[in-house]
Amino acid sequence: MSNLTLNVPDISCGHCKTSIEGAVGELAGVDKVEVTIDARTVDVAFDDATVDQAAIVDAIEGVGYEVAG
Image (cartoon, rainbow, N blue to C red):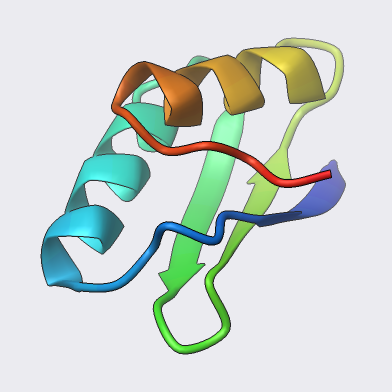
């Protein structure tokens, strides 16, 4: 199991949290996803044999949020 923290500067509300957690949570291999609104971060626990960071970033960007750096 791997852990990843991504910075997503556009996170500002509960809708953002719900959208991102829903999109990332649907990916096969994702065990846990948690958006922290105040910190504007997305923490993901995932099986790196099933899903990779690029797929997680694509899922976030696919619902309209840019992942920083």
